[in-house]
Length: 466
Image (tube, rainbow, N blue to C red):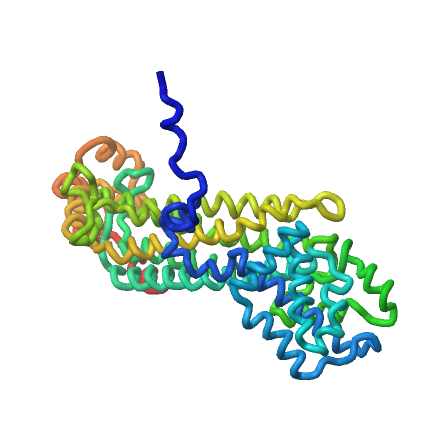
């Protein structure tokens, strides 16, 4: 009989560490994703909220309201110092307040008021902290700042990947390689041309990612400045709110419900997913080329490829990249579909989804870093490429039948099909056929001079133009 006590873990209250984290992003892969902690952690989210609250307060203090005199430079500096000097202890303090009142944004408001009490001018302005705001006014701007910074971290890696692909395209522009359409021997290309294809596609994806403008709103509970107008009808509130949002580096979102509609996020996440799909295709192609022997992997002295087969050097970097990019896309695409949908003026289902931004960006980062490592470890095997080409003379049936078409030879495709399909074709077999063709002698000489390794079209030129 099964002893159920064996299924109970010895510790049920383990301290959080890289070895006890339930997510590999904060555990096994923590060293790779560590920079995202300063962007997507709860600490980073709190700091971004404090920044939005402070900038809104300072904007209100510039309106000339009798109840809120202009703040002197020292008070402005002290207010912004709450953001600049924001610490883990400050975050813990806010979380302690939240544990009592069960509201995270209100906890930020109370924390600011508590610290402002030490500065007389800020103390007098205390009730204007969070003035006319709904929590989502603060949160949506905070998330905009976080996603903007997270995007910058990913784009740095994407640009490194693009640069590496471009370098490899140029380096191997002339290196002939057998094409593989449907996995079968096909028209030759060059190694550089295949890298160039991915470089050009990735460059377009990077452009799309960078073109998305993060947005924000500060317009109240249903997006119409109701409380603002009720309290201060003499103020033209929309340009005031837009100015604060734009000062944060975000674009103003004028028409919203209680939440900013997140359409820009969906656009960005779709663009990231497209870039990831390009890299997934690269990972799989390189995995296959390694299997064919077109590329060798540089062994690492202490590394083990298999627990039982000592000879193995596995393409684990491309496999890890593929797996992480798949996880990233699953999360990105769910967020792109979910976040723009909110019932009536607000429901809270977007809140828990948005807290997984770091998950999506973390798996992107892991995928990019793994792909970069994989690219650094591979080198072309010219002998393997040459041998594969020399064993595939049947691929020259394409140029031969195309030349036959030009000069009016009847049924050129059908004749080459009969000669080559399902048969072993050698140089001698093909040349014997070419010598029988009723075509001009210069054309015959050109066909006889052609080899699988020289039938490359514009591949080299295209590789150099990426």
